[in-house]
Length: 303
Length: 303
Image: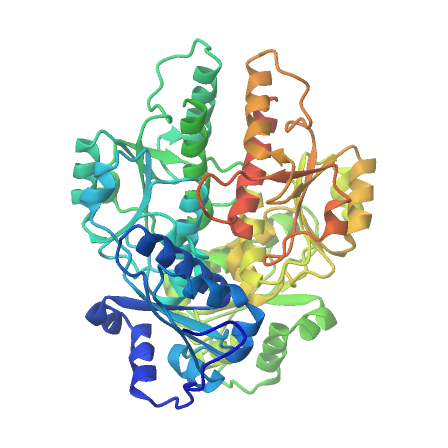
């Protein structure tokens, strides 16, 4: 077992080694699907992956992290990586690799000193719904990896129970998407490759309301929030069209076109984040955050 | 005057012409500062610029747009560009240019068919404060152009009265920043190149409260929102530490480090967006959006 500050002698130095090429192949979707693995780089992300791995192995689950490659400099600067990997439950050994090797693995201009190869962490939809979720975000046909990661991170911050990616969305294991999640990929259940109509049907069957985020929606998010606050203060209010405290599946659409007509039609309501200025809309990440926080706030107040 | 569907014969076809090089120089900060001009590309952004230009000229103001270059295809597809430019107040003529020329102007891989050269639109701080603003966002040492544009767009959506960029922030006229604003650069006053301490002093003198967005802040944004809702419902609540309905200057820090200690010290309070899940924080754009919408909602309810 490696010890902090004492890198093993068998450092990887050949950027054309088979193992390096195997990691590099995970940059592409087909390479990832073939092995059900992805990579992430950088000390912050790898730390989150190693923590999740330790907790999962400790609980008798399967391995989250398959391998970690790091430069000597990185291990010196971030000794907690070695500590996390050396945890008895982890059964991991960090392989020391040259900067050339790390660079060849990830094809980034400025390699960040450490790369982890991880197993896919997504779970089946049924598992998510069986846990009686109160708040889920679903992304439909989202194309930009940065946006996908941003929404996952925001959903985590809002305390959502899961994030679902439709089968026509960008791959959440895309390196740029993984980076944008800032570790949230390991914090809450993720479902991928599912059909929107199947998800909506299952969520409704599980007792969830379904809201479509839509700039032209007939319900105003601020009004729903005010009604929710009014209920908390036991005010008399007219019947609300949607009770924000209820278990909710939020649908978010493609960054350029939003949700398509047939996608919106699946929801119980279309809800707009009000625009008070002259902007036509918010971008996907900011709109989703406002929606998810509105639900989180209402639900936590009613507990 | 050019007519829709009938491009003039003097189309620009030489990508090495002086005029093309002059536009290309606006991609760099020094080139922009030298001429107090910037460029933006794409039909959506140019449309916003042309609308702002027409309204400004109509009101007897100075020119927002100096020149527009477009491909024949783009003008056919977006006839409103020609209409906007041909407005009597506009005094503009769209120059037809080849794709090669447009590509040389903007150095983008996929040119979007139209480029506008615009004059700087920022205004002095004193002008903003003289208008008795209720909500201002200030970005301190923000480095990523996409983040800067995202916050400007979110501030516009939240109906903020102005956005201020500290002198150590990324240039809002950077092409990528301009693109991320999605036109909001022309919707609300922008102030740039100012010192944080000067802005805070002037804002306080103008009667504004100053809040620092800070993940470790002692005030919880959701609590402030609940107190604001309680006031709206005339509930008895204990004295609030900050009345969200009051005129507010929000400070947002660098995307990696947040606000520095001495920056936070200038604010009246440090306010955290609560994190309900395991995420360490929200990213800059999403956090700023939640803060600005919280203020906007409280202020509009109290009107």
